[in-house]
Amino acid sequence: MESKQILEDEHLRKWTLFTYGASNKKGIGLEIILKSAQGDIIPQAVSCEFNTTNNEAEYETLIMGLQLAKDLQIRDPQVFVVSLLLACNINGSDAVKGERLAIYLQIIKKFASNFENISISQVPRE
Image 1 (cartoon, rainbow, N blue to C red):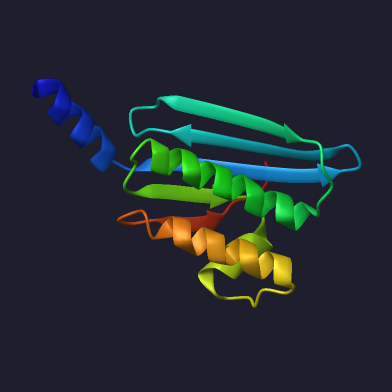
Image 2 (spheres, rainbow, N blue to C red):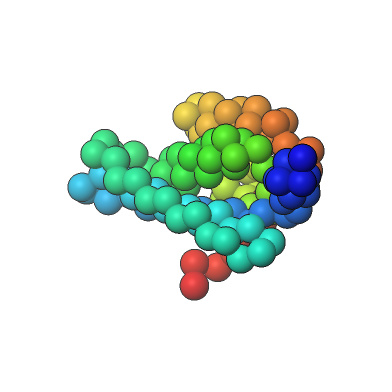
């Protein structure tokens, strides 16, 4: 019983998710770091062998991070993305341009509905 309570309390706390995606001629790289309030870190990196734009890579990375957060039953992720365009698209301060990015945005919004409270902000690459 006590271990179950600890697990439940852990999931109520904020987790921080950092995402970064990049694209070049060799494919795309997706990197995420999920960090608990206690400092536990879950890093993930995926290399994909298909071509896409940097913006699409950023969306792919965020989807991967949100899927991990959902799988771990995290309720309140605080998300930081490198892409200003991605953050502005999600927060509605900039219109999505292009059909593919619009589809990505729909997927992100669907994932966001799995969380009790989610915030998505842009941070500098550094």
